[in-house]
Amino acid sequence: MSEFRPIEGNFQPAGARFAIVVARWNGEITESLLQGALRAFARQGIADDSIEVVRVPGAFELPLAAKKLAETGRIDAVLALGCVIRGGTPHFDYVCSECARGVGEVALTTGMPIAFGVLTTDNLQQAKDRSGDNEENKGEEAALCALEMVSLFQQLNS
Image 1 (tube, helix red, strand yellow):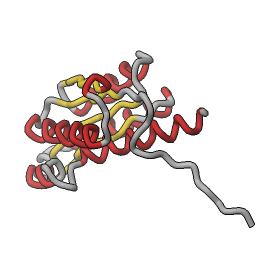
Image 2 (tube, one colour):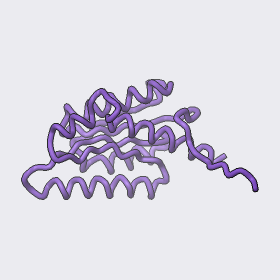
Image 3 (cartoon, helix red, strand yellow):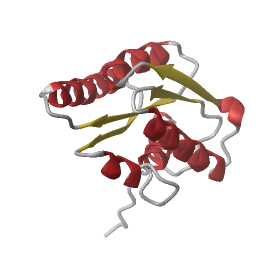
Image 4 (cartoon, one colour):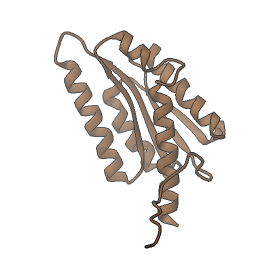
């Protein structure tokens, strides 16, 4: 029996370019997510000039900006970074649902990896816990996801 060897990505795709779309709403949190993503890229040797940062008003606007960036042809993956904290109205549910649906739709319609780094938390402390300078930072996770998916796509296309 031959040895089964899966195709999988790594964290160092050759010549890759990335865009990070960051929501300004809950800026203290989203800025920490951005810093986490940038740290992860730096650890993997991704040059600053291979990364574009674009800011949008809130999480609801992330999918449209990600789609526009994906359509430019100058990048290989997009990270969507945002934070929605539950309040006392159903607004949270609508924003979270449409943001997640939109990001997924952009990935499927463009064929480009769109890493979902949007926090949907019940309170500010949960958001801080998931955006701090620690191993739980979801911005770092989104960057690693984007790196791995671009590397995988490079292998699948070769």
